[in-house]
Structures are given as C-alpha cells and as structure tokens.
Image 1 (cartoon, helix red, strand yellow):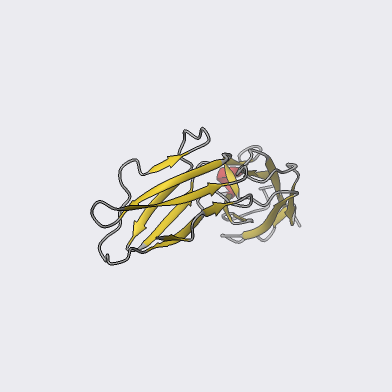
Image 2 (cartoon, helix red, strand yellow):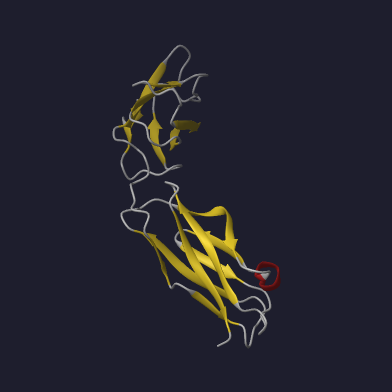
Length: 200
C-alpha cells in the first residue's frame, strides 16, 4: 500500500516542489524500487512532468514540467512478482500563476553615496509583482550601466527569494550615474531596479 494516494499538485505548486508517500507491504521488509519506465502519464502528456525516487520505504515525487493537466501513475516493485501503484494527480493547469508584469521594488532606487565611499557597500531591495506568487530570478545578464561604471564600481547583484542584494567595490566622487538590475519572473516578465551612484 502507498499512502497518501493520490499525490496532488495544485494551482500554487511550483517547479521542484516535492511530496512524499509511505510504502508498506504486509509480510515484506525488503527494498522497494521503481522499474525502468515506471512512470506513465495519461491525458496525452508526453513529457513526464514529475520525477520520482525511493529511499527506504519513502516515495518522493518532485514536480518537473509545468503547464500540464492530467495524471501520472508510478509503479513500485515490492516483493518478487508484486507491485503497487501511486497516482500523481495534475488536476489543474500548473502554469506559474498569471501576473500583470507590474514589478515593484522597495526601496527603488537603491542609492550609494560616492562621496565617502567604502569598499564592499551592500544594499537590498525587495521585489514583488501584482497577481504573482511564483519565483523570481535575475536575468542572464542582469546589470546594465552607462559608460564604464561596471568595472569601476565593481557592482554585482544576487537574488535570494524576493530580496535583491547589490554590492559594490570602492566608490569615489568620480563615479556618478545610474545602473539597473533586471529581475525576471517564471513567465518571462521583467522589472528593473535602479541603482544610483550619487554625490550626497
């Protein structure tokens, strides 16, 4: 027996989300395995939208491909010649929640004072997007600056959750201007955080 059955991924599920189920078989204490091609999806789903692994008596199922509807069945082998099945229900369209693409950063802009610059300046801003609850990421080339501010300011950016962290190197009064850090949602919408280098 595998429980719970079914495992259900719903509207708020995100890529990589994992759910587990426990496996038991009366009179058997050996290993459980998933056979080759042990995951079959219905409803015309050709790209398997889940991955599954077994550790001991725990079946773990991780959501892969988004934007599909239907169900998948995982076959689990137990004692020789026996097997059980687990249904993974993809009951609603799993595309990342829709968004308007209206990004908000707080604060915006981030401002660095170049008058009394100190190496390793760091500032943060929180990103949000109306009608969107999915993950954010930096674009592949997120920093855009005029002139030669990138090598001179040594500006870099990282994103953890909904927090953008901007770090600079040593600043001085000759480094004036603005850069942007571009953040992307799972739908491909983008928003730009302004980073100002000002003589304050």
